[in-house]
Length: 432
Image (tube, rainbow, N blue to C red):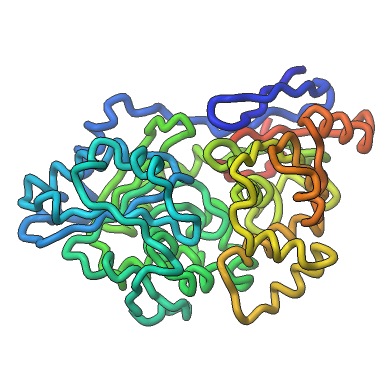
């Protein structure tokens, strides 16, 4: 049976898997998309949750900073920013006093073309700046009740009106992206980011995909947003085609929890039996580099962030992604490459006192590698790049599947996960 594996933007790789071996091809079941996206955004800005309308909130303010996500997230900004800027103008704010701040967390700075794509029609109208977790001037707001230091971008904090704009997807530690994560990661310092990504958080069973209840990462992020005095949140739910399914605005916690309640079941993917082999496509835009594939491919289907995994120890994970942008984060890569085994990485990094962004990813991936063989298939990266970090490589996805069938035998059970970056994978034997 031919199965199409998502590979980059709007492309697929065909793989033949015997029907008798195939558990299923899994993806989220999307809800009805919104046709009038601009109208939907305008409606929630005028009728937000537990907050005044954006226009009323902006009246009398001297300036505004709108924090947005980077290129690695769906582009709700292109839809929402023109409407937001128009409302701010109507409230009396001129474009010279409006700044869009790209909040990439510890990711690389945005390229100019990416900024143009994100800002769309407001690119030449308003100011924009890219936050750096390492170089931007920060303000120290103290600590959350969880002991996490709150050091965030000073320009954002000192803005008279602070707006956070982004999308909501399953997240390995926060449960879901969006919400307070714009402050705890997006416009935060490397010290703040590192503090919320330490093993004590990674290993917490509540700090998992799709869980916000008693989740220390999620709750600490909400505290940070409150300490930063964020005035207004706009979050939406989009797919890889950037179709909009839901949008909400208002106070950070209330608006975000409303979205989570709406989309949790959409993202949940139930698998009826345990697989010997998982063929996984993290999916665009999370398949362009090794760092993101490791997070939203490898760690999206196995490891501590997956509450009810559909694989047992010894299963093989085949990742099918181009990774044309390379390694991306060298702290992550060099940490995995430095030690003789994944088990050593877990033990050593787990005891680190000094933590940098990227150490958490090495720690999480090493946990998975301790239990599973990970095969990277059909990547632009060379074979030795993966072998240095305890992974295997196959020239094509088909070769990887054929080898798995040879190794696991004629009764091997195989599941295909499409767009794992938006899944909450859950083993559920009651599913028919």
